Length: 276
Image (cartoon, rainbow, N blue to C red):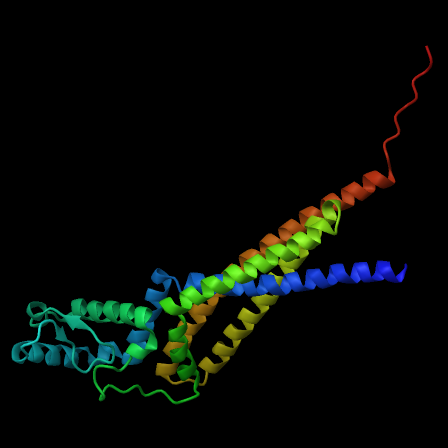
């Protein structure tokens, strides 16, 4: 094989490797965009706020403070006192709302506020509302991760996914033009499967690390870690589907390539018809 031919083959492998990397980045940002979409992010933030505020424990005191504020304050709506995220309730409702209805209102409005404004909305209402989270701990990392499922980051993920999706299309086109027959489909499927498997391995490693940290965590951190594990599972689920799809296409294209080569090696010989 000549040097030019070797360079040609190497360039194909290089394009395929870059395609796998850009696809892995595309899968990451696309899944992050899905996770940080309004509905999914709202559920994640609601659960995170419930854990970090220990809402079930503080709800009776918050209820009493809210009712007292509704009776003494001239403002309308009433801002819920001693709750770390700004939540405002109309004065006539604030005087009577309690129990599960108040709990749902606090979590819904808090999740909406953080999704729209980011973690800067946290602890704006009362300096006495403190979170007992050790800095640089697992819980601290997960708490900071809440800021990554906001509207701002959702837009960033969309732009990044579009960018890496475009780069993947360009590289896939280059690979397609430089290959022939079923080898094209085989190469694209291999790059897709490789990217999905790499992404799946990374997500599984993160989930394993969280599960390992969970064994040494206190009950508060354990709840946050459980939330992190559930979020990582969303990534694992997508990567698993992409991996299966990539390997399915890889198997089909490999079969047709084998069948095509087999037909080329054993051409059908038609019988010679006798002369009339």
